[in-house]
Figure 1: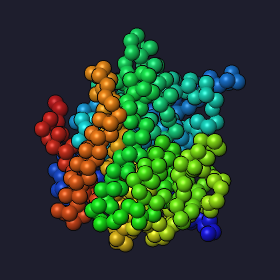
Figure 2: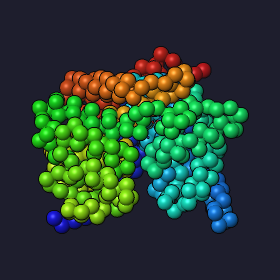
Figure 3: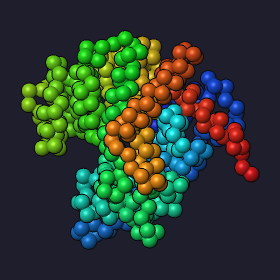
Length: 423
Ligand code: GLU
């Protein structure tokens, strides 16, 4: 197969995309105009510029953000990403999506997100630690176990969460494990957290197959992204009986129409830090992966992957959004017209924040649960949210995304109404 590169789509602004999704839901809900203008803006946006001493002795300035979209239902919650393309508008969108995600799975949080404009691959391990600690210190005016709880996101790991926890704790003079989730087990992390997002994706994929009367064993899958979400999803989807035919990472995609040996791909990835070059598979671009003739597509990388530029050429009839914001609103409308079922990000990838919630609860109580209990509770929450989303979607004859938004926005709107506008 030729590695055809999709024409470059127009640059989509994720924040405008997020606001358009909200506006559509607000319209369907006939939301009160006052609530509309409160919920379509972010509550706080915080920009920091800070120096980091490089190993060479030189000092480099970095820019980072922490945005809190909403705190009505509880402390703000959301990850921190390290990526060269981070922007304030991207972080605002991701913060708003966290609000809806937490409301949809009904955990007592608002939404936040953070990011630093940096390519962590260009830093040494020590430089990465200094950057993380300085950024944690800069945003410490906002974060805390009762106010705003960060977690991993794109290019941030359990080790980075440990540095954040340590920095905040050192500044306080005592350990505050509940200030961040996705930590290592040794300092109050939770069993099942590293695989939680991928596990949630799998639960949702199975539920969707059940709803559509499809057999997972007869369902071929392409997964875009092979990080903590895509890699785990590929493994668990395979264990659940799906046939994963294509996976990718930033350096490219691999494809075998007969199905990939995911255990072998994971080994190859551990050895070479990329899936590219996996023996016996066709090598493709990420753009080509999205257009493969598979039944189910799992975008598990960055936003704006499925756009008006390529939506008409997507062959999968089912898309499970493991990434945040992989589909633009224009693409959404094209896919809907074509009858493609899109399981929205705010449900599909909510497994991560759900187990983050379990981690936070365990930290606050200093009482830890076994992995079997975590996974069982996670599945229960994901299935409940899936059923509520489908219920609203069927009732209003709207897409699953709008079904999910109706549930989520209504919960946040109801909480805002009972609290009232201060003062
Ligand atoms: N970064 C993940 C997300 O986008 C997890 C956030 C969290 O656990 O707080 O949902």
